[in-house]
Each structure stands twice: as C-alpha cells, then as structure tokens.
Length: 399
Image (cartoon, rainbow, N blue to C red; front, top):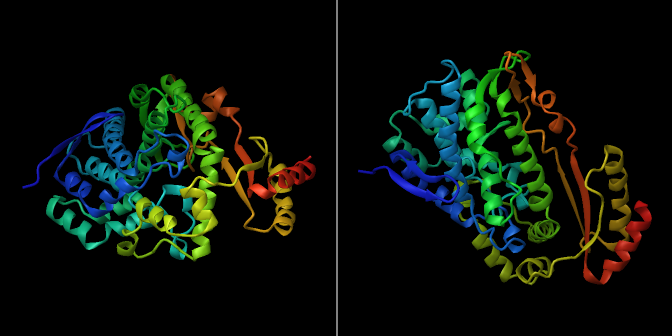
C-alpha cells in the first residue's frame, strides 16, 4: 500500500505528499522534469541555476494548499476549509502537474511544438495517458484526471474558476514559487518578497464589474504585493532577460530549425525529449549553432536598445530588420526581443479591499505599481567576423 511521504525543500521546508501525489511524483511525466532545467540555459550564466522543473512543481503543490487554506479562512464560506476537501486536493494536484508539458530547456524553444501546441496543452495531454489515468483510478478516491484538466484549462464552474487562478492567474503559486526559487539558485536577492505576509492578507474577492471571483489582498498587504511585483520586475531584467542566456536560446532555436525538428504533439513520443537528449544530439552535431551552445561559442552582443521602448520605437526598430537580414544574411545575425509587463500579473484585475470595504484595482491602491513601465528591449547578436560592422550599421540606423 502506498503511504504518504515527506520531502525536504530548500524554499518551503518539509513538503507532505499524500498517496495520490506520491504516485504522480513517481510517474514518468513528473520524473522527466528532473531533466528539464527550470531556467533554460541560465545555468550557463549563473552557475548555481541547476534547479529543475521538478523541484518547482513540488513547491507549487505545497503553495497551492497554503493559498487554498488562506482563501478558505478569509472567504466566508466561498471554499470548503477542510484539509481533505475535494477542491484542495484538486488544486494541489493541478499545481503538481501544471508544468509536465514543458519542452527541453523550458521556455527556450516554446514555439516549436508540432501543430502549434504549447506546454499547457501538452500538460493536459499527458494527464490523459494510460499511466496517469491508472494512477488516479488506484489512488484518486473520487478525483480523476479530468477534474484536474478542467482546472488547467478554462473551467466554467465558479468555484473551479477561482481554484484555477491559484494555478495560473494574477496571484498564482507559479509566480510565488519561481521568484523565490530562482532567486535562491541564481545567487541573487531580486526575487525575494514576504510570502508569509502575502498569504496572511490574501482573500477571495468578487469583481463588481464582471461578477467573477478572483484572488485579491486586503489593504494591509498592498506593500507586500508591491514587493512581489518589484521582485518579478527585477528578476526579468536581471536574470530571465540576461543577454547571454538569450543568446543560447537563439542558437537552440536556430539549430532546431536547421534540422526541421519540432517537439512531438504525441504525448508518449514527447516524453523521450528532455535537456539530456537534446544536449546529446547537439554534441553530435556539426552545426555552428550547436557548437555555440556546447562549446560556449555563442554570437556576441552587437547592439541593444534601451529597456523601455515605446510602441513607436519598437515599430521603428522592427522596420530596420529586413535591411539587416538582406545585408548580413539571416543566419549571421540573431534577434532577441525581451518584452514583459511585470505589473500585469494576468488577464483579470487584482483587487484590493480597503479598510472601509471598498474594492479598488491594484494600480489604484499602489502608486508604485501604477507608474511601473513595460519592459521592451531588442538585442542583436552577430557572428564574430561581422560584429564590428553590424554594430556600426545599427548605431547609424538607430540614431
């Protein structure tokens, strides 16, 4: 008989997994995540960033239970507060499996799935394979893979929509875990925020405009929310959008496209692909782009714009690219665009409940968040023989 298990995590301490969670952790889709770096090629820039999607989903599972408990405690009956309630069990499982569909090196080649899939759809497909369905049949105690798939898709039920936001929403456990985890393993402090205070002030709020329930905060948690937004902003500027890490991602994509390779849409075939298999194939390749990754012979940075381009500036820079490709060739220069609204935490509004009970959007409650600018930056990389010429041409065209 399968029993519960305790796991030691450097971020959250001891994590408890019940029999269903333990069986899923031991499944092929979850164990594959041990061979998927959480931050793609960032380990080639930050030596400590060897952590994987596996540890991240364990942390997200633990956080999902804690967020559920906070919402149930502060929600006046919106959620069942029982530790073994169906909703709590489902949201923990959904957090555990939400990243099983990630391709090798995580987001580095996200666009190269067969049939235009993304990793979210692949996660849902993997939940449907016989191995996973058998685990739910044996240990689910009434909870099935379809219940979890609904939380990872677009549920219609009001309670399920609220639960799905714990996994992927404005204040989700994905963001909370990866900021703390990535900051620790990269050896930086940018991603830290007061998780305990955020959980203490988190509560379910019904948007008066849409009528939908979402995750918000009490007014006393506004500064903690600001700290999370600021952590996200700095992690993107200093870590996720690191210029060297972006260069490796570009070389991976070039190599895959040279080979005409796509990540399989079939879930069983997809399970054969991870960072190890991909790096092994790159080591056996004579491609310039494979060597760029394996031997760190990546194209140097030739030019970069400033960090906060306006829409007009972005359009003007895009208009320069055809001339560059025509002059230097499409495979001699590589283009990266790093863009993000770090203060836009999701598609819906994050509401703050003021002390008098009034509900206001996060941007209205926070002067800091209201004035935070969008990140939008282009970088151009060039093969070493062309570096000086590409830099000179871009300086002239852009100025």
